[in-house]
Length: 106
Image (cartoon, rainbow, N blue to C red; front, side):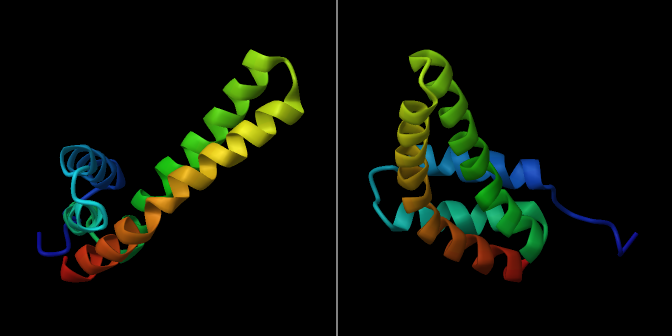
């Protein structure tokens, strides 16, 4: 029983997303707090890091695909998707630091 895993990546993603939305008015500290809680819920350091980057990568890919499909021009979709991906990644810094702290605390 002592070796049972306590968290999951999906749980970490959910808590990071929810707390980031609720604490949007605290730039820097909101994502940091969300990362700490999500990292702890993810159940370990590696799971916490995956929980930070997986949504950003999926969102970037989805924006590229939908941008290309809606404009019928892959180049414009690529530029729109890349720009959106950069905006998503800009939020990952404090979230990653918090997730590392939360993953270590677990």
